[in-house]
Length: 130
Image (tube, rainbow, N blue to C red; front, side, top):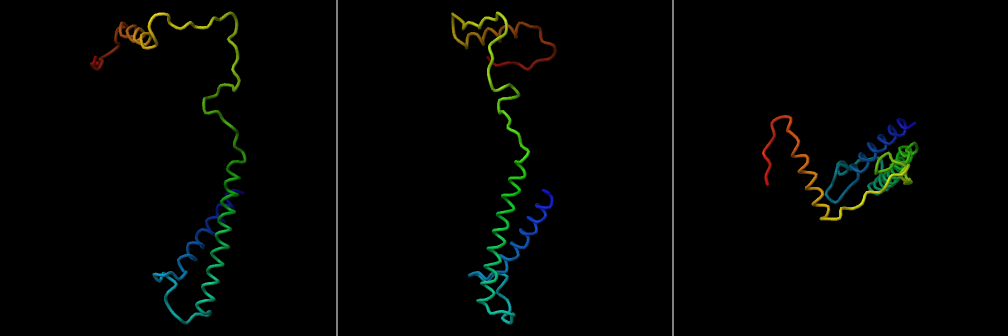
């Protein structure tokens, strides 16, 4: 179904581009050449304007339909991850972590960094700036 609508949409786009290029503009355009047509210049302009309007409406409708088709099977997802939306209490007798009494979060991070530095390096390391 979606492939059929895409093909129709692309055909409308191709004809719409050709119709717009054939219209007479202030600078001339592709529709400028030749005065011996089957219609007068006013009749041709009206025909091309109406054709452009119909093709533009078709382009708009097929775009909306393709957008609806793309979102038809989409399921809502969380931007946070695959965690459930509701928060649950910790199981058992887990106690909440108390904030550090001395210093702030920067001191806690510094202590954690020092503990990692005390571990023996497994291979060559790049020098660290202080």
